[in-house]
Amino acid sequence: MGELILGGLITAGLLFYLVYSLIRAEDL
Image (cartoon, rainbow, N blue to C red):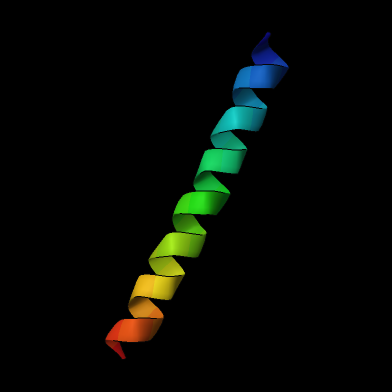
């Protein structure tokens, strides 16, 4: 159970970082 939550957090973090990078790239 703990590993599943940890994996979800990592996946969510990667997705957020990806979207954030795309938004910053369009800003520049």
